Length: 260
Image 1: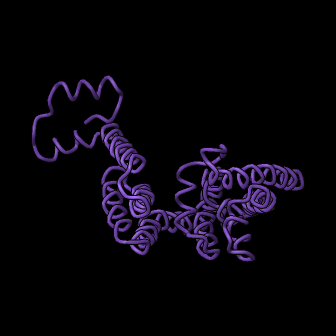
Image 2 (image 1 turned 90 degrees about the horizontal axis):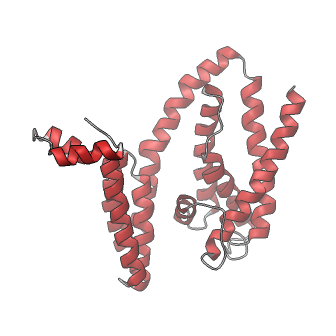
Image 3 (image 1 turned 120 degrees about the horizontal axis):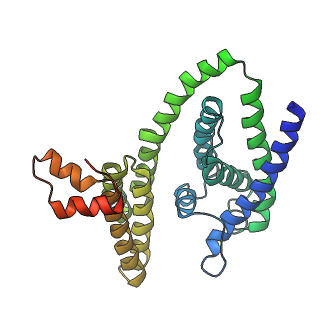
């Protein structure tokens, strides 16, 4: 049974890591080349600014949270694909060569190293979870879950906010503003800070042109939609002691969004 789990973990981890590594690298060639990644992955990897230690420490934090999830719930989370494998792959390549064009942006190198990283990560998570005694699992859950929660909020938002401030005045401004809005609406500032970094760097590099204006409008629309679906407007009316307009409540009822 253990041998079967080990072989399956190695195979599936290598296959996933190969695709994830190649896809993460191909994101940097968009829109000419399609990449199997996500906007979040790209933003978080850019925030590490090609520093191998930053990439490794970023992935390491989410490795512990993924380990806690696998122990307590028996589930492998999405952080492995989005955060651990691509960042650890980048850290290994950048440790030998800090030229991102030859390492992080190279699909072939990222795919090969990513397959090794994926095999190791998935095998560690699966095998460690299986071999732990039940009593140790319970203890590990009590210790690791609070630590994982602290990592996600507030440690990670603070790290990204400091990266935004360090990247420049405009980047720091937009990272702070959008991070604050993200925390109010979503309960976590990281998405907003990442968007602020991308918007701020775009404005610093090329000013307010069609691309940066479109990005800004898109971000505002996304925040409005997210706030509406989470019922921020209804919460505001309730906290201020105001009567909720019937039309607004009916709109929430039709969309199936948050209701008070």
